[in-house]
Length: 183
Image (cartoon, rainbow, N blue to C red):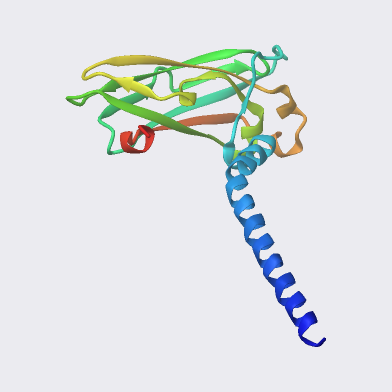
């Protein structure tokens, strides 16, 4: 009779260990989408929101500065057409960036972005952006890329953003690794 409880304890311990491994694996796979949702909800690290339309202007303005960068591995010249804009909070606005492939072959790139100050990220909302898709440029080709956006009027009621006068939208283009994307 003494052997029976020992087997039950061993089986229970093994089942708990397997259950723990399964739970941790599930958390590992869910961590990226959960982190993305958390960042979008809180604006953490300058993460922006997405929307289909702007709510409408509130007759208060804010300055938006634009920054453009490229990875040294990408033979592109990438610049904003305007370095900054004064926009009405809540109103739909548009900015353009230009990318030129200075290389001898077609290259596909993808852009990452952030907003500073980071606390303002949750109030900067994109309606349309080139950063949501990969961009392919032929040798010597120049492409004009729009960003349609608005600044949520809620920025005016947040005590943490009351001193924000300028929001900087920064993009960095990186080459797409075709070995990773062609599978």
